[in-house]
Length: 462
Ligand code: UD1
Ligand code: CA
Image 1 (cartoon, rainbow, N blue to C red):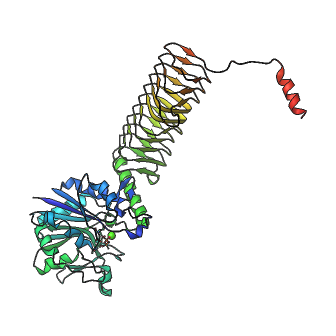
Image 2 (image 1 turned 90 degrees about the vertical axis):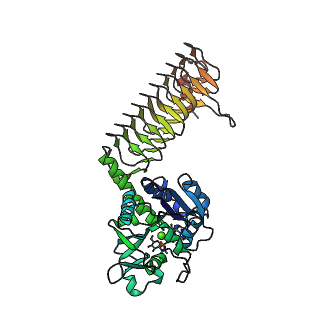
Image 3 (image 1 turned 90 degrees about the horizontal axis):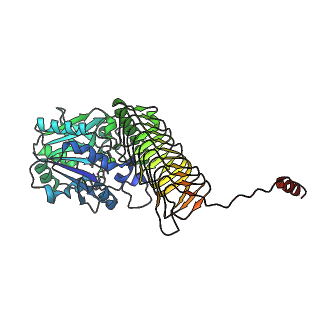
């Protein structure tokens, strides 16, 4: 059987109070991933035959986020949820199958909920199943009106509900499963005859009832899942729930998280067993962390592949590759495109961009490494700078194996230090250094015997 999915993501999101028009509501991130991508992710295990995302307000940004996993359909004017679904009619209206409709602003919905909703719909041979939830504060949601037999009769929106209907605590989560053909047959009959003058998708429920189609409800037990993000307070509430959900899963899989309230791990991150994550740490994007690493406190890692048994303390790492058994930090900043081998030591206030460190390299303090390749077991002394930029172009520094770069050296690129070479501390190098050679590039020291006394007397007499 064909299963189609339609994600409604064209709405304006007025309550997010964004500065610019291009910032669609569903593009707001939770732990580094946008709201609408969470919805797509929850849909994935269901393997829909085709998924449609309805975009409109801020649609260019939304398109970027969804186009890999969904067909983008534009709703140029936002005339309501029913109108949004109508935009897919030209693709779907004649197809046999089952269609799941959901909103792009409900990131906490789980795959499990969606599959059991679908299962229930099919098992009970429903033509329409709506996912409902019983909550204490139903204000703002569409209410589920049931008939005398307790069967779903219709949905009434907040704006249109009578005082009595407003007291109903069973609400519409905005997730539905439809018999596809019947959905599109009825959709054409929607009218905007309501308080908001919109075409409500929810009106289709009553139409199905009137036709004698089989309508049912599935009640969602955990109301946190249906949280729709309309403002930034709800965004932070959802972040909190998602954060604890992710952290809990990781802990149950063998990762120690010392303070789960204060650890921010993205939904796509993987972490191996016996890794320990210390407080104040953020690990986001497509990051994979192997086994038995110690990360944190206060470390931020994004889109980085990391092996096993590393210690990474109070550092910031973006877009890098790190092997095994390295000691990084505190206060290391790997700004991108760094390849770190195994058993290296990268320490305090070392900043690196596009740096390639082979096994056993040491760069323990106060160093800038940019556009630089460093061979095995080389030591980069404290205060070394690769001067890689002339204000317009970037140049490469090549450092071989077993090189010793003395403290306070400036290596002006392009430059090569061959294997086993030695750079005297305080040198400023502009010329390549050969294998086994020593380079000294600084003024020769002169000591004036006894002159310190004379100088001090001079100073004090002023
Ligand atoms: C909707 C439901 C309500 C339900 C609630 C659950 C309707 C009429 N009401 O109300 O019963 O309790 O969701 O959260 O359906 N959208 C479009 N195009 C539009 C209008 C909306 O794509 O023209 C999208 C929005 O981007 C959003 C979703 O549809 O993702 C829901 O729209 P929203 O305006 O938030 O509906 P609610 O008032 O919350
Ligand atoms: Ca909403």
